[in-house]
Image (cartoon, rainbow, N blue to C red; front, side):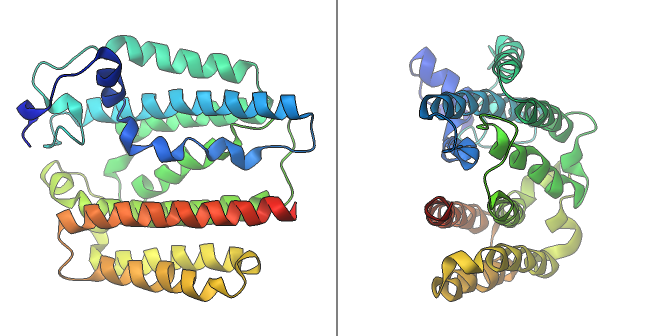
Length: 281
């Protein structure tokens, strides 16, 4: 599909495509990680809904800024709608989205306010100046600095649920693993634009080793909750995905598909872990 083959649709669909919602809709439940069952149910539900609305604005803003900064580098309009010549209409969103996010944070506990500022700031620093995505390792870690604070957006007060650190650590580890696979999938465009990602700097084998270490951290941190399943899950995230990442036959196109597979495996793992954690707390 070329840039000119993108079908026209309703203004709402065009706006959602501009925000690249399909690439991050699975992330929207993240604020539920800090859902507090110890406070009145109505208070907890309002905090969760406010956190998810805030997250929508943050993600839409971050992905829009990234699309703008990469519009002359990306080649596929399905990935970045702004590669279509003359495509605009995003200027109002660049103002409205962060304003909505900050407004929602203003009615939230102080950890949510800090997390919101962090997400908005890192989203800009990653894609624009100083464009952290172009710095090996730093760009990879910047993804964690952007995504991990999103876990805090659903807080109803300034306290965290018991055992939250385990969830946060496992999420961070699998997030970094997915980002390394992502860098493999984007290596052709990144190299052509002079972006030196971790994958391009260290090569597939060392990147796979880093991915295996990240998978090991996630499994070790959650072993007590996994029971016998830790061996199957460990094989998947510590062995299978890293080996595929190191495979000589992993083309950029295959890596892009592998990232999607990893994403949904991580989502299912996270959902099971979350259910086990909530049953325990």
